[in-house]
Image (cartoon, rainbow, N blue to C red; front, side):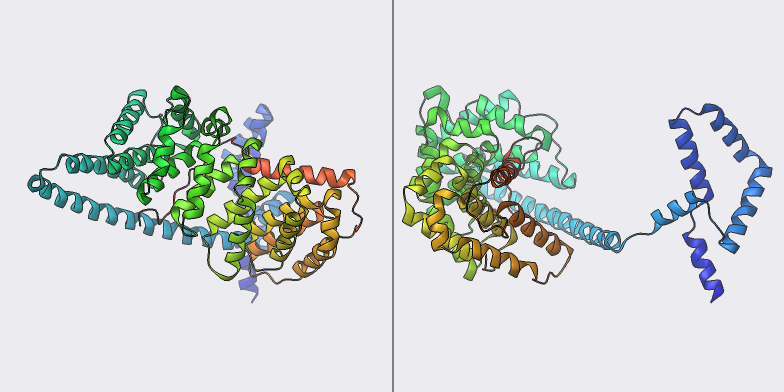
Length: 482
């Protein structure tokens, strides 16, 4: 038993050479050059090395009063349970990552075989459009292949050249004039593939280039005819292609301003119309919600959302998710959009003048916080409720038992069981939000300075989530191909 304990003690002791390196690093950093020279000279001497070895053996055998540096480094070597679990998860992710890469390589192999088969059919078909389509497929396949062989790391270190951008725009307009829908889809998807392929730190500049080249011919004509006609064509593949590219452009505030040039909300109105026509959770619906959520950072678009009944539509979508499965992206982005809509002075004033509707909205949101909805949606719902917890809505708050129900929710949520550490963190975040936004213990309805400050913090949190600093994220979904 003693031998076993001794071995455990030895294995946990830090290495003397490692400690020496730490000391040398400190001496160099502090410019103690003379001390460093003396220390290195002592280490190199055989006599001192033997003395240190003997001392190490004594320490290992007795375990008496270790120097503090030994104890500090020894404690560093002890990994927490969380760190061990994270390492295990990292290994599992790496394994899955390699499996995905392998699957990607196999898919490309099948795709290349199919292209070769289509080439053999091209000669007999004698169709110019087929030949052009095959060339476009080759280009896109080549770009995706670069992503795979680089193991997901974007290869692009430069923006699309001016010539390539001009060629895409020219080709898009020609296909539009020729009413060649497949050709329009190819060009739109090619632009998006370029956007996905480019290095993340250059994505914002790419969006600016798309705007500068006026890809939808909005600024040159002072009209939206071209993009509106594209959105009006009833073709699912084209709608997927055009909404995915609009989503890329709307990723920056400048992009939103381009899409609402001169305050014209026709594109926003068309996107809302397409959104409502889609099957819940579909890829095109996801892109529509991405566009609307990004555009909602600009207050001038909010009246269009309100008058096109987006508040009720989003509430209905969340309600449907209680009993049926809705794509997580749709729920997350829709509820975030709802929070952005409700926080604006325009919407709050609108709800003041529509007391019955304000009551319905408040009542439905209060019901959601007791339903089994995903945590991100729950947070957005709580943020919406915080915007409605104002003196202007005191009557609705009383009718809905607002303060009591928030207090009941906090009480209920405080004791729910969490399955893992991530769920525990989510639980803490939700309860912190409630503490900052509502102060359940204070049942007064007056708008104190503290409440205003907390509301500001909540708004800042949304703005921080929305703002375009840093690298942009362009949506890309696994099921887009189907």
